[in-house]
Length: 334
Image (tube, rainbow, N blue to C red; front, side):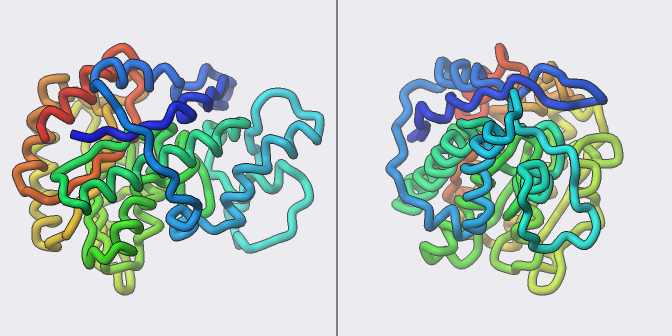
């Protein structure tokens, strides 16, 4: 399997997140990359497809914000990393915002996703890796892996959150559509619901989004991912959410995934994008499932058995020492 990764993805190194009422060490560390690289073998640098595939999902103004905020933060005399504290939860509308705090809050959903000086570059090359994996599969290879970091599935079209800045799975899916694939499916098997991906394709009938995740009644992102969220308009019925209780083990996870795969099969996609998070692992520090390392190969084999061309996009997974084995186990199922 071809694996795509760019070294600049490791430059983003957030120090803190504001979580549970206090600054805490950031869970999404660059060391995640080193452990995956050690386990999966050689990688290729993605070619630079430019901004057009990213702008097909994320508006230029939002992309400019990600690039400009670190400098604006420094110019305002702020130490440390840019973290928002005010959010427009009602009547969100375009405004000319003069202060960096206002600009930040208008394009963020939480306080755990600081915009570092390197967040844009790392996210840009992660999206390029996702595009490269997608194009590889469209060229005839059965599957390819984009080692994306930082992750992407919590990022909406014009907001960041959940450690995510650009939505690599959405960029990949849209790139496939723009390449002529009539129907694309996204299977999200991260511990947390991919609220950004869901929102981007919420009212579209050409992209099916299926997610298995911790019940948002108890876990982040709380406000999205409930079972009654099924899309609307042209997208009615093309969103499938399967919330799972804390303590879900590998067997229960595979049964739930079987439901999602059956829905995807009825949709009959020309390409599958898998948002893969290894934070479903039993020892993950910010999650509460009980999926074991040997389960990952079986979970992946269940997906591969359908024979869809598949672009695999790395999402979460925060038990750094175990991350390499878990990712390698999943890829081995393909």
